[in-house]
Length: 627
Image (cartoon, one colour):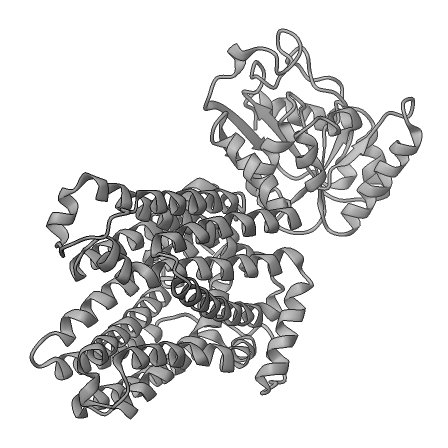
């Protein structure tokens, strides 16, 4: 499989047809929904005796109802059958739905209009598990972040463009015909792009379908909980939809009642937010180094809290007395701060959501992947319903929309702290990511020599107190480090080492029991298929040169024969965390930001060829530029 950057994926048949299909589906959803909502808002009296407000809320409920009723079934179907075939059947179903919806517009029939809306919710329910579970089958692990970034960007742009187009079409004199042609034409185009999606064989072809949505939903959630990190990632995604739904639902009234803007200002706000999400989603690949970097998730949650808080602070306290258009809105400097907050909320939302989806795709058991994503969709829908109920309650209680932004920001901070306390791996990866994007600029070579799965021992020269963090940042897989017990106890670093399940070790003279325990833990980790990294010198260099490799590597390999990958760190000697010139971390002059460093991985060494001297020669050659 060719491995390309995210924009290179748009030239690949394994991604482009799927991207176009999902883009057209999201676009069509929003053309139809917005055209319907606007028509009901202005012409409900000609269709029914219900109020326009009741109708609009009924439509919102009907669209989301299928996610509760059919997500569990959709997840099973996506695991049991070829996902590309499911996509094509779903797109044929969409054509039929849009024919029903078009008839509703042409004949002004409310029953047909609402039936089509419910069926579009069913369409999205069936497509959802396939949308995210097909990516790991067609993309390499290092392409998942970039691929998800493109999908999220495309989805938000499709929502934005579809919303605008739906509003423009329904405002025309011959609106029914225009909307009908647009939605049927888009559905047909989506079917033709789906025909080019390459086959994605089923993950569980022998699966017996459980048609009971309640028991199957419960079974999916119970299975997801077995992998704590995946389950909390699902909850994190659902929380993002709660956060996003709370903000987006308030945009129209916030624009009208707080800012005094017209519909063009509301569109400007939605556009700004969508551009932010797209930019953040696309930046994820560059910021993550083309791996699933969950360190971006805490970074994203910090931004979501700070800029929602600033949106509250930037909101005017005096209610407007007149309505202004987009040009007048932009002419006021204070309004630029609001747009700045919106674009950054969107951007940090992209940093937050893309790695979480990629994490689920990379760590969820393949045979249950679609069902886990279906369970995620159910929780997303539930969280959005709770969001709407909370907003209704708070607004009826006398809170203003800016107060709602403030409460959402504070809740986001509380939820983030809670999740990161349960899974400190997120915070640990954030600290590592922060180090790599402030103090150092890391360049890697040969990292593909580290196996993507299965046990192996990594051996590396020991130059500084942050060597383990640098190796962690460069490697796609979690690593169990073997580390001197004294270094293991260093404040702050100790949190990172404990979170990463570092194995403390001591010499036989210092603590023979701890030494034996360390070797037992190493053997256990390798037996579990983990990567283990050791620093065979047994100490951090104080001269810049390698100390002789000790015999511990022989004891490890004799007990558990596994491949060994030599690594070499470059450029760290003389940095703030090295011992050049004396004690480490005492010379501020060595704390130069964005210092370029390197990590080079050599070819795999077979167990029978392992010896301390041979490995030392390989590491030295890699460090000094050899091959």
